[in-house]
Structures are given as C-alpha cells and as structure tokens.
Image 1 (cartoon, rainbow, N blue to C red):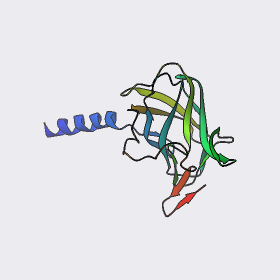
Image 2: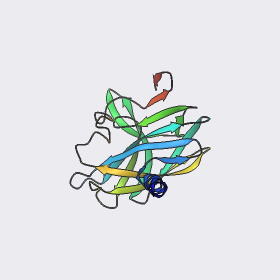
Image 3: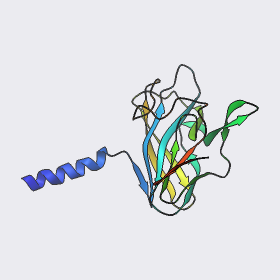
Image 4: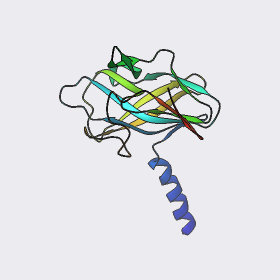
Length: 171
C-alpha cells in the first residue's frame, strides 16, 4: 500500500509542476497580468534557465493575439520606450535571463480577448538550438508583481538582466 501511494504521489506531482523543459532550457515562473478594461495588448514574464551551452530565444508564438513578439525597453531622448527585440535574446551558458516588467518580455499585440485572472495561456518560445519550448502562463490579478510577489516594478525599470551562477551582469 505504501508503494502504491508513493507511485500515485510521484505521478501526481508531475502534473503540478508548471516549469517547461527542452534540451537544457528551463522556463519557470511564467505569468501575465489580467487585462484592465478594453486594453488590447498584454505581456508575459518568466525566467529562462540554461543548464547547457549558450542559446538564443529568437521568437515567441501564440494564438491569443494578432502578433506575439519579444520586446524590451530602450532609453531614447530621455524617454523609456518599448521595442521589439531584433536578433533574439541571448541565454548564456549555465546562466539565466529574466523576462520581467521594465525589461525583456513577450508582448501580445491585438489580443483576441481580454486576459482574465486564473486563466492559463499557452505560448511557444523558439530557441536557436533547443528548438520550440511550450510554456504555460498563469494570468494573475491586475496588481500582481509576479508569482513570487516581486518580479519588477512596472515599465521603465531598466533593461534585461543576465545572471550566471557567480555574478549578475546587466545589459
């Protein structure tokens, strides 16, 4: 009986984990904010952890919006602006990249319908070497700062951060 319980518990735990894995790439803590009112755009945030050789996320795909793009923020004439990332986002060998408010993010332009709290949305991240990685995103309330309560402070907070196991380097 104890063996059966252990097997059932192990199998059940496989369905609870929301991290996505492919090759040496792990995507974790994926989230988006619920839409406010008639807003037609949305954004998704997550951490990419690379357990192997350097790679690059080159695109994002979804069926929830007219366009799904990799975005970041740039300072232009003392004004912080969102821009599509050209050439992809480097994911360093044995390092990580944080997609967070005010930094790298996946932008949904022309949402088919509003993002609702509690909803789960599926996207695919396309990597240069690892290929396609499916990711399930949890839609949190409009005031959320992420699944851990502090993924960032909103738009205009600097640029993407790359982290390896020993130090934090900003772009």
